[in-house]
Image (tube, rainbow, N blue to C red; front, side, top):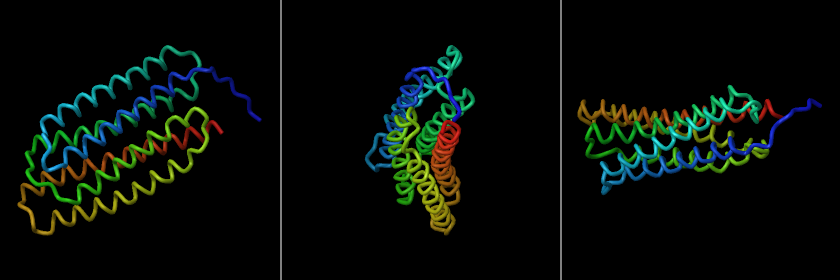
Length: 205
């Protein structure tokens, strides 16, 4: 058996847990942005604040890595996980920003399906992150994220097919395609995070 020295330092795990809480907030704001009666400017403002908070947490993780002699797991993996989580938040922020900037009045109902996938990804990622410290019971997490990503891909393709079916004005198609692609990008970013967690778990097992 390979023996490992690991310091008792929960600060990294705490910061990752905070980061996934930011993602949960972001997913909720994303769903709120799609509501027909939402104040889009206010939602966008709150999303920018949430994205800023996520950036601050990412910077805190990096500073912690740079000031810690022995980290709980490989530095490269800590950087990758922090960056991956931040990428998810950036993609959700991008969606909200595009909806506001493009001034799209009516959003296809299919977008709600993609947002529901994102909300579910955020929820189970947030639930799984505290288990990173023990490296136990994580397999169900990355399997479920993979399943959700596959479901998101199917919904993405169906949504694109509807956009190009001839029922929308050409300019609206271009705007909506950008929004839908960013939504799909957020789901892909969640899968990237799950893959990183899986790699860390395999290395530490």
